[in-house]
Length: 236
Image (cartoon, rainbow, N blue to C red; front, side):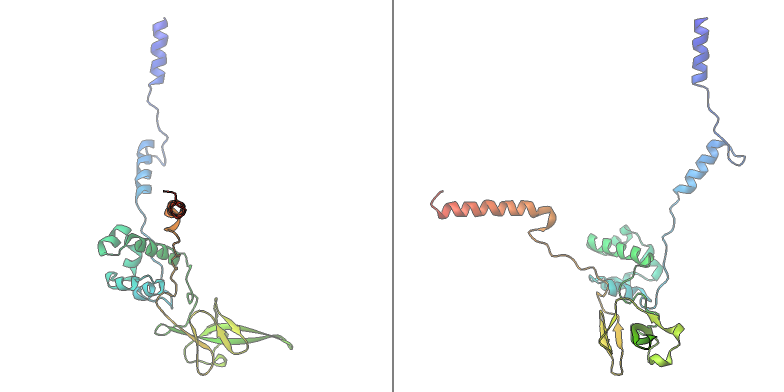
């Protein structure tokens, strides 16, 4: 009797469990298909170019760090945003920190986090023109804003829909536009032209070997200073 109860308990323990079915499919088969589908890698997002960054060479020029020299290695805009880190290494994009820097800027561009000039709408041959728009809030109050306008146009020749207010630039005084890479124009306004390194993240200056070796270097320096002090005092 006891052995029968043990056999019955063992039978319940090792009885195969039926997996729930989904949409008429056996449970295990549905789970396998779902896992296979979820494991497939998604194609990386390729963002559309913007007026200030229409091609690969301009993008690499703006982010700096010498990446412009690799422009010929990317035959298309899609290649720039789809090549993996291993593929970039095979193409000769070295050292590794340069590849990491490029990958970071690719992701920023996908997210719409552009550098200066990224909000320009009217760009011709890598140059954009900025003008001052004056609006009257009241008879005694006037506001001045910097706007991007089509090349060669005066502010009163441009419709409001074609004026684009831009970030990073402001009106200094009455007629001067101040901001990064803004060069004054003869007939008023300013011109901003694509320049190498405009979007570059400047590297910090390492002090005493940087964070990783700073403590070690400073400790050795203190030891050397104490040793030199003892020797100058006649202690050897």
